[in-house]
Figure 1 (cartoon, rainbow, N blue to C red):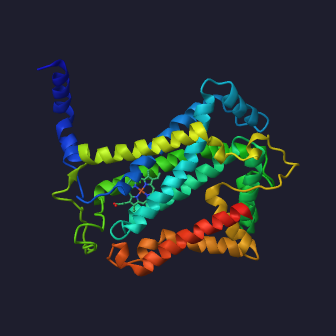
Figure 2: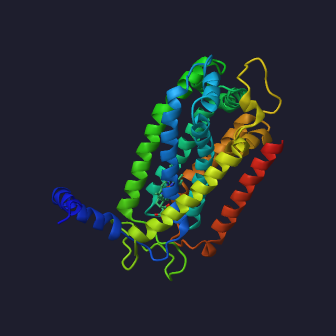
Figure 3: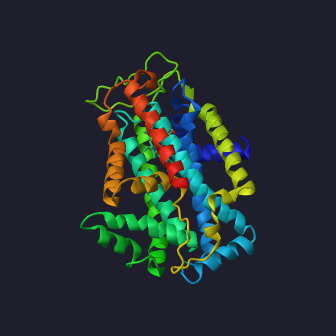
Length: 367
Ligand code: HEM
């Protein structure tokens, strides 16, 4: 036996490595008609990993103090070796993560994978969606630029429109009546501890559910497109005759991850500043409101909705209702059919929703 084989044998006897590989990799079968959209979840895992790694490196030089934050970020960009690269990866990565997250959600919806018995996969995903928006919002303030300061002022202002608790909630979020040094302290704490831990925990829950219930069969190509689960007893959805995760599907996962990395690094190297308007390069000044202050692209539709309605409360209620419907979708959309072409009402709402979201975001950008 070669030394490598004897080490493997020693570990196999103690850990049952062979059995683990068989159960989770070579013997873990996926539906025969699985498609590339199913690899977006793995792309998200890679992005989250990159965000954690670059975030830890940024922490070495970043100073969470209103007097020093902007200077420390400028120092990272100009003086720390490869600091610019780490910082741009982190900032561009946060935008890319929201984009991939939206694609993952849309593809899951399109293929009806959120339907029974995967309501909990959807709900844990929906919570992840909110946590990731939260981590992006809190991170935006940290460079303490004019953009960070005023975008956070606008974002936290709308909370004040909630009746009874609004004012209290806004002061709690800001750590005072206005955005100021205490806001930076609490956003920093939440951004680097609570939110990454919460996201990590929900990713574990999301993957546990995936493993426990099994991957859904895409509703294309094979004859059966309906959920044939009865709902009165637990059932693991296996895929006899399917393709193994390793090596077959891992190759698809790796291809999607490499395509993602190619796009991501192209933006980082060639046009990172698409995510940085000029106000991102000026230190925060509470006495000077910039002329055009806009939230990040993924909040533009929400921002425009608030402006369209005669009062902010109405705008908030419409958004609250839309988010509640989205969260409860698997409980509202109860038909067993999963093929989008056989769900005309769903298809119209799906296309209408995407068009409305994009139109509101474009309107918000140019308004
Ligand atoms: C950090 C965020 C997320 C990560 C890392 C993640 C990861 C994954 C992974 C690895 C899978 C299995 C492969 C696949 O179908 O893509 C998956 C499936 C799934 N995800 Fe996510 N996800 C995230 C966010 C979300 C969100 C925001 C939603 C929806 C609101 C969602 C809903 C689902 C559902 C319903 C499935 C089951 C799909 C099936 O079995 O066919 N996920 N996710």
